[in-house]
Length: 415
Ligand code: ATP
Ligand code: MG
Image (cartoon, rainbow, N blue to C red; front, top):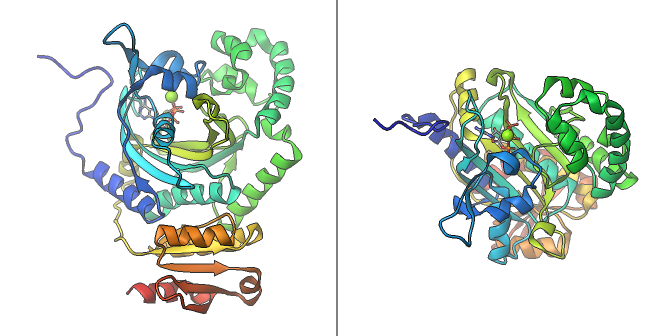
């Protein structure tokens, strides 16, 4: 009898998976993300150029084949490159383009618990927006999915700040002298990477290398003043939202396209393959020969690993119903913390909520275009008076609501 291909699975009871998928679907739909789907089959060059040739994925894990002499195809190993391709191919103008997708990925790795050759990811991207507030919103949505909706607690959110290309160049000089002094102690893969793509050494799974790298120069010690400010702002906003996290200075992630923030959610309940969600900020414009930057943030949840985790934690979970959309519009950056708190409170209360960052004029236009039903305006005056201004976008009428009463007032509007 022909058996299944090594490293693949027959999932004969998808109930946990479906509940999880529906939960994540609902969670991101009510945060104003759109469900999309891209093909499983792509041109090999898409990943070579965007993920990077010196990464594990492209260097040794891709399923590549050709049906004629001219074109080389592959089964997609990840979703971000495909999402960016789709974004550019369709000439999307929505800003930011907030989307999620779900489906199988393929990587030729050694099969073991939590590591398959075909596995599924739930992938979330906010494309073409650069803002620390957006980064924090993105992470807080993921964290709320795991903590609130799935009631998981036994996990750790690790974050590192990679800075800009220039920051990494400064860090590379320091790292090079460190590696030159320790070249004989590192594995042969790291020796190759030390010249080809130095930061990738931190990805090494070899324990000896990992122990040595705890003494290596940290990226966060080589940030420019601008990056340092952003890194600090990120930490402050995470604190304001009471998100628990740790700084892992060795976290670089296994793909080349990241800059600034990178993060991972992992749980000791999962054993060796402990990471169930990972992501970061990236700009794939150069890989697609785009002149303008396309600053974006994305994350992928490993669905099978999250199912394993839910089962290990013994958690039941429920799916709230969909409701109309509230929009929160801070008038300037200094009001982002207040806006983020309002967003967190409303979204946690199960209300469909988006946040609009980028100024009043553009924000009003965006709220209209997006069909926001009630707009929550937060200016300096509102902040000082402890209120928000709530605008009914259908009638145009406005009312002042105290920040304390916002959730109950918003709930009364839709009940
Ligand atoms: P790892 O270090 O575990 O190999 P990765 O850095 O290669 O992970 P990503 O490319 O960031 O992983 O993929 C996002 C998520 O997809 C991971 O956090 C993990 O949960 C899941 N994942 C990655 N590879 C596999 C696999 N072979 N089988 C099952 N899940 C996987
Ligand atoms: Mg991997």
